[in-house]
Length: 341
Image (cartoon, rainbow, N blue to C red; front, side, top):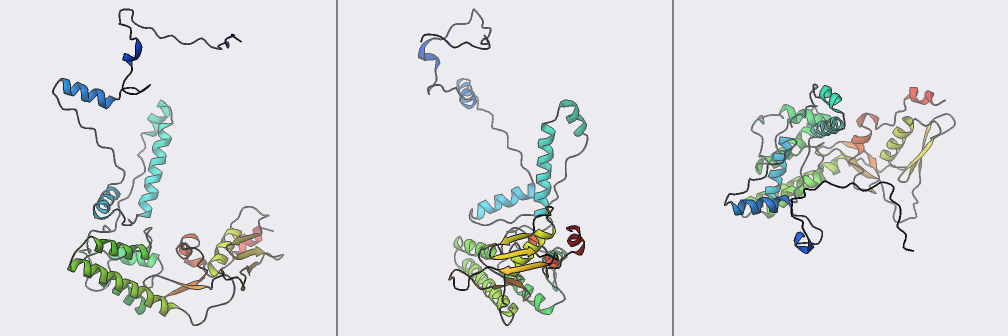
């Protein structure tokens, strides 16, 4: 008791001016206990004393100009609106930010050498803005190049008359309300795109609101019509087709040789003794929670893709994102199969 702890290092004493007056008592403290006066308060006080306005703060630097403009437009319309994104631009912007952080951690000599190389370029969005009205370059017959290229990438067959007819109905519904046609692969689902029409109708009055509600209703009817026409005659028995594809895709590309089985929801995918894929349905038919397989079709078309178990809302959306259209037949790569032996 009464002994002080030894200090391993002596405290650093700052050199003070002897002529400066000493501050004592509570008069040295500001409004709060232990708080320090901010720069804004000091600048405002100095400007009020000298009757001069304080300088305005500098604007924060923005990233992608197109994203900033679209986000500001969306905020002006309704904060509940779901905004779409340009995937290639997002990846390029993230790569640019990573490179900027990497250069900040460098030393002066390395940073000087790295700054000689330009930063990754963020490409501009080649598609028209989401709420910028119907595109002016739309031809009288057919589709523009940017729309046709995106539709083919998502799996649409523009040589099929029924597929083209469904796309034209969707385009015509958007043309009547002066909105850009809905596009896939932009981080927004068709359900949320139609919901945007309903949200815009809540902010409008009279004829404009009625047109937006009619467009949303026609788009919903078109989706149901395409889904019914794309539905095959009978529901197949067995496991979820998409879960089987994801499991096969994961097993064939797994670097661990001991990994020979994986379970995706209620589907068990495993490799047998001959390295052949085997799918087992683990659903209990007596369990009321088990659901039947539903038709997963390509939006705005009458093309059936596969039967899926809709336990989660994102199941149909990640079909093309994870495995791609070319892997929907569960084809096994023989090279990868023999590499396991």
